[in-house]
Each structure stands twice: as C-alpha cells, then as structure tokens.
Length: 205
Image: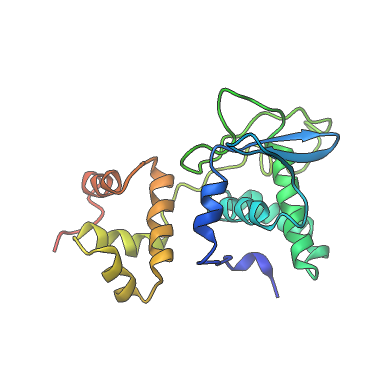
C-alpha cells in the first residue's frame, strides 16, 4: 500500500476541521511545532492531533504535491504505522515552512490558504530538499476532476445536480470548487465562473 497515492476523505468531519484551522499561526519552540488558533489557544502538534495533521497533509497533497512527495519518500520507512507516518510528514513540512509567530499575517488565513516564511536553516545550501520541501512550488493547474465540476457549474448546473451527474458527494463537489478557486486566486464561485469566461475554457450550452 502506498499512502500518498490516494486522498484522505472524511466527509462528516472535514468542514469542522476547515473551520478550526482558519487564522492559525504555526511556530517552532524547542524543536517542537506548535500552533496558535484564532481563539488564542496554543497546541503542540503531536501524532495524536489528527485534525491538524490531516489538514496539513491535505493542503500539501493538493497544492504543493512536489513537497509532499519528497516528504513521503523521506519517511516511507514509517508508512506501516500510518498515523506516525502522516505526523512525520506534517512535522517536517511545518518545520521547513513556518518558523516564528508573525502577527501581521497568519500562516493559515481566513480562506485556508497557507502563507510560508523563510525559515533559518543550518542546512541552507546543503539540503537536497531546499526549494522543494521549503519554499515549495504551488500547483496552479486545475485538475481534470475539478475541471469537470467547473464546466457543469459554468453551464448553470447547480451543485446538487453536479454531484448526482458526476456520482460525487456534495462535499467532494464543494472541495473541487474551493480548490479550483484557490489555484486561480478566486475568493468566490462567481469569480471562478468569470475566469472560465475570460479564458474561454468551455462552450456555453
């Protein structure tokens, strides 16, 4: 079994996770990763913190796949113990991309978008993963699955009907639209449709 070849799916919990992981600030203290939530509460990231680990994994899988793949390969010896494997990946991604508390911009903003920092690293210039795991490359390409959903949306099909036509859950349809918006910098569905019009992505029916 290769874990990183498939997406995590937790339809009943994901919306709660997304809400709790808005306006979050990650930081490293005594070689441990901590995060501060919007309500001011602070938590150490551990292998028992499944919601935070899952959020980090899903964000990097979707938007920074090269960084995710590098971490997954680095810790593949641990994959028999899946929770620990996921935790090691999440910990490394946080350590390499979030360093100190910065009150000007949250590491996770109100839209769930990640904002990275330049982390001082003693291996700068030597690490084989420099500019791969740290300063990761954003995947701006709208996926084929997202494109199928957007095309129906573009042609006036409602979300429930999209889910039925493509045999997807409403949650998956929501995620495809949200992720496509994130890739092009749109903050709402109407901006996504305007983008499709502007770039002549589809023919209107």
